[in-house]
Amino acid sequence: MDTTQLNPPLVAILRGLQPGEAEAAGAALFAAGFRLLEVPLNRPGALEAIALLARMAPAGAIVGGGTMLSVADVEAVHAAGGRMLVAPNCNTQVIARAAALGMLCAPGVATPSEAFDALAAGAHALKIFPAEMVGYAGLKAFKTVLPPGTPLWPVGGVSPGSMADWVAAGASGFGIGGALYAPGATPAILSSRAHAFVDAWQAAQNS
View (spheres, helix red, strand yellow):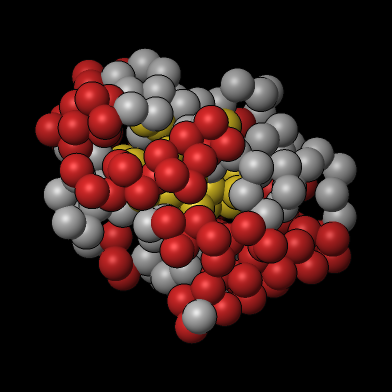
């Protein structure tokens, strides 16, 4: 899968999104320019929310699941219409199954060993998690040893103000959680935050 076509390469992490709020949240995010939406499975209602978002997603957008820890999670998300795997860890069986189903695979890695294992299993992008622990220097080190062009997406503690520094260190995308969405956030608040992240991403590309 060619991740260079994902623009902007920003994953909205919608932890705790309830099905009743999914359409309004999705509309706000898609209108702001987000094209990658993730609903972590470790909260109730995740699969239903994924199904609702997948049905309303515009062309070129991808909806998927987060905290996908097993092959069964992959099967469930795919059956719900999800076409993206995001995980906090590197489980090669999970990655391989998702890749076989044609899903965008972005597993979590924190070491070069995990990164190479993930790529060998079929990962398309690497979720650098927790980004606060890896840091800018760690990301630069990843970039020196991984195949050129490997998408590196820091997740954890990313803010609009820190995106330019991450990009300078080698980030080619981001996963954005609590700074973007928390349960109860109104569509207006979500829209404002989403625009701030999209604007910061675009500014980082032009700096």
